[in-house]
Image: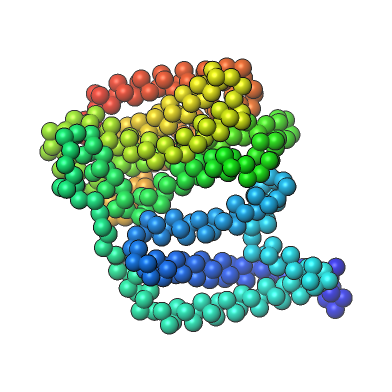
Length: 382
């Protein structure tokens, strides 16, 4: 019900104009406030890790979405996302304002102004702290490889790769999302956070996706959408000459770089396969097929990303974003992974009787070809 002093058309226009201004301002102020709060808390506990800061901030912003998924009785994506927006918080106030939407609008505007001024006040008072912590890089306690005593060449190369990976916030933040999504998603299934995860069916105009189909597609997307290897050679930058002048074979280097991407997904894969075996599997053979499919898909995209990066390297960059998100190797790998996801989706949607068998055959054939290409490759000739 609208307030009688305002015509309906003008109220809708006023409502839209205020939302256009207030929501972006509220989101920006909230983002700054949360980021600053996380940094202050970590500094209080003397934790100076950009990686922990990024992950903690990400989880805070992800919490409303996960909470609403848990609370809602429907998995309709439009309902889930609409109830996670700031505007929904104020629409809930209808219970206390006799459905006068105009009062909700004024409340939203007042809260936005107060919160914005409060954030600005903190910005002014904490200016020196912000300059120190946001402008000057914090010295990281990186892994010292000289202290690692190991006779294993692979282990040394892996720790070297891990050190390179953790030294870049951009690298980590852009490649950790899908492993984290797979891990968190599998835990939601594992702890039965909602019965809809096992009973829900998505009905579209021409197909019906069961909860099992949705789970398989979710797992496939997480495994194939992102890989560290598509930029793992280019991230070496001008230090690539160290590898060029070393007696290492390219295959040794490839094993270390592929292993890093595999390790990132292992926690999520363990829980994912356990959930499938307990709730979606129809037989032992079906479970074995799913396990083989997930691990072979992960190995395939890891090897493919490395080989593509070898074909399209970029060692002369000034910003890590140029290779991690905008590099040719990353873009080409993303296109190929999209094709593989689409192939899986089509077979699942069509309910093809031998979907896993056909996908496994494709995976193993491509993996065999990639192993052959990697063995013949070198950093110099390519």
